[in-house]
Length: 611
Image (tube, rainbow, N blue to C red):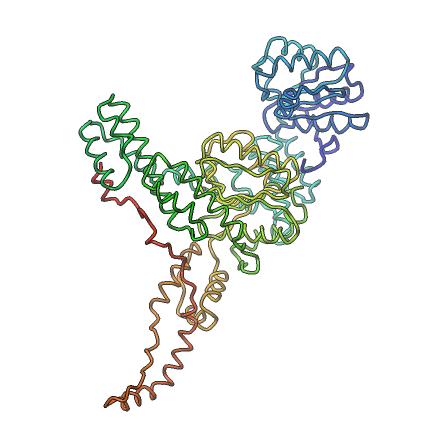
């Protein structure tokens, strides 16, 4: 766990006092008085803390085992025998297939007067368990935990803040109490963030600054509205094509559209065989075909941007399938393999090339002063949010290089690669797990998304640092309890659009001091991303005249006068040369190898033709 959990930092109030007193008796008379002991409440009110504190105290008397629901299921599968008291968190998450073994375990513990403790989200009467298990729980002691009342909650928040090293004014503590909805986990997450920001030295903890630092905890639209990730996800080609395809409802029109797709080069074999079948089947398959075509277009763009010279076999396979909707998954896998292999040899960016200024200094300082000293122990996960082009990927790669220099083992994954499956390397062998474009996880299949979140939670429990780079995530996004825990407990920073000092330094690094100073004097526009700065530099470079070509004398009549005029202009050219020298050094944007594109895009004209 990220910190030692015991009764010293368990805050007692009217809502949990009975459960606390009962826990003391369990510790004093394990297996004798209250067995089994079951505590329940809504998420975030402190039931896990209570069980951890019991575990902490019972360990002083001897061996005691603590399991999550999933860990306990694994123990049952392996038919482990328990010779010590056991504590099981989240009983409601244990699958019904393990209920017979659970019942047998409870009976064995009762027979030997060995203590067994549970927590859950529901009262026993509301649990989806066998009646025999319910009766065993009711035969022990059942305690619920209620949310603290407002005044008690304010007092708790102030005490927890003091334990973390900060003093909160009454009005701030009251506001946190109202926003937290009494969730202890949420309160701890908020206090962690306030601690991190207050360490910067120039942040006063008044209501205005707190609203800024904790903006994602507030209801949507209050103090800090955020863009909707769900809306962004609807802007891809697949969604557009699917919506339009619903207009096709006549067999002859299907036949015509299939013919057009075939003329465009796509393999339509799977549809041709269905033209005379049931119209509903044809419509369903056609919709699926359209979705896959949309994905193929995206993959063609991804492939066109790749450097494949070192991967000729993979490139040949991909190019043979780029028009086949049936091979989307295989293409995705091959592109992912190329990217992963390329990443293994790709030099990572460092903080030496990361320009630090007003727009990102807070994020950098928090990383240096809070994340690195307590890696995996306190502020975990570390979430880096920002709009497209604000430097998140560069920041992540710089962190990767920095931690690598500290002999840390790191795994970095880019979820924008859109693989259909994600196999996370064995987390036991890494110190830090990093994800770029983490917002893309919400467009992955549910089983893949669930597996990634499980790996993240396992890493957090093992004190392995999690670092996430992401676009802003909508506050109304539907999240599971485990997913909510990640965002509530983590420490969030934001990379803002490039500030003036960052913009100027970025331009200097691209064109040199002389040319940059000239551009600054002429006046720079406002940029919302580094992509816009790159485009501006490229456009500016195109407007700078090139130096005249050198004249080579051939001994022809009239050359002397031309050469004389050329010599007269040397001084002017030398002056101009100094000005444009820097402009010639501009690093152009990385250009895609368009000659290697199979299909660059499906144009609006094509969509209109087909629909």
